[in-house]
Length: 237
Ligand code: URA
Image (cartoon, rainbow, N blue to C red; front, side, top):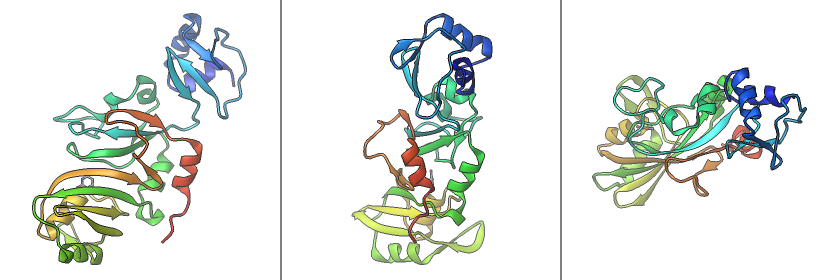
């Protein structure tokens, strides 16, 4: 694909703006400044730099953000800034959006993509992609609460019980909850339904992805092709 088409496809602005980046010597390919818009490059595995920032070509974009508290996942936030502000303009221009939402005060692993089919694939309970939450509670967690969440609790908007795929005590006042669905405020409402109260919430895992190797809070990175394939792999049941 031509380099100017690559820049355009990756969200670096209008065709004129992309041509401007090249003319201003702000684009590097394989470490070398490239100014020729017509140079033909293989997009698979392509790494390049724009204004000193490293990019990987992605036909559809998938990024992992370590969400800090104090940001809303909504595109039109009401009380807090949007998580979109933590991402570069090129990604925002591509129209990426969160894969499910985390509350303003929830921290942790948030995926964002411009691929609608992927959003459905990763959020639909049918595809069984586990999301892991580290939950702080204001009262001690006991075996009965864990048992109840594993068996299923009824929330106020649906007569059908929702159940945790996994639930383990991680401390006197904390537990790790694994969910397959992503209902509104699901963790907080499940914890409340068993008579406790959630005081902190952090998502540590999404399918095969974790935050064990970063990025740090407030930072993002691309999801690699191998990680994307692992996310799409059928989870063991
Ligand atoms: N469940 C919640 O209650 N809040 C979140 O942010 C995510 C899951």
